[in-house]
Amino acid sequence: MRVLLALMLLAVAPVLCAAVWVPPPQPDPMVILGQAQADAAAKHYADALAKQVWFHEHALDYAQGLYGVRLSYALNAWASLGQAYPPALEKLRAERDAAADHVRQGDGARGYFNEVVAIDRALKDDAATRGLFVWLDANRNEVASQVYDIAQPSLVRAKDYALCGKYLQPQKALQAILDQYRTVTQLAATADRPDEMKAFAQKTLANKTGLLIALLVQNHRKDEANAIAAQAVKEWDDAGYRQQLIEALSGRVPEPWPL
Image (cartoon, rainbow, N blue to C red; front, top):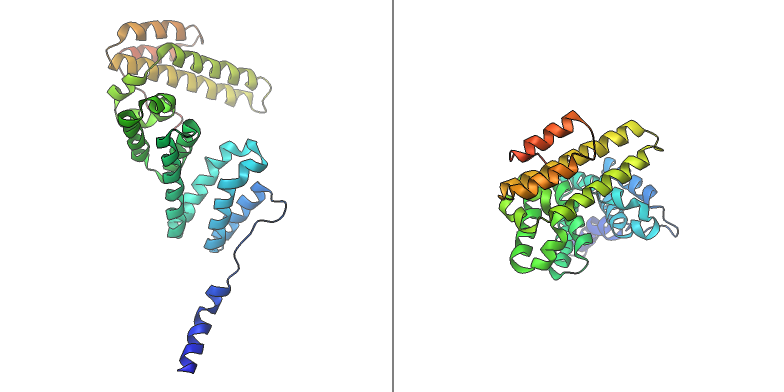
């Protein structure tokens, strides 16, 4: 009996003694994210997950500029890890569910809704984003109003045009679109790749104004759609852009971009 017990203890000893990763005293978030990728490639999955979780929870404590990386590249890497290591997928979904709970409570709704959308994008679960917004529409209308612009792409892809119509504020939305376009266009003048940045700004302008106009048409608000188109067309003198606005006025809803 003693021999059997000793063998059982030896069998589990590596698990019991396995080192748990802890961050260094002065962590560099991007270094740790890179280490997570290396660990995943080496099949050190538990360490990779620990580092992905640390990056998600603490990266912004060290560098606010990592906001975009945290909600794009890092989440995609985490989701990829989840394909090989199911606990990583479970943890990522738990992070999404926790953020969704904050949204339902109205606690930092926009920030947490952005997080939900980013995780759902990494998980390729657009329906979950729409489902959360539908819940907000039914239960927390004021929160739904705060996050509608973030939810709009998921609603459009689901062809939920009537729900979009409840939250459209055309003039406010157009002003935000134009402000973004002008800001990015100005930044492009001094960017390393000005043509690419300017092209991005132009494509974003065309897509967002087209969406706004088409959704108004779909909701039988043609007069407002015409007024928005008349203002939007003055922003950029381009034949292709004008054609996109004409198509939107016919009710053709463009695919949201960027995806």
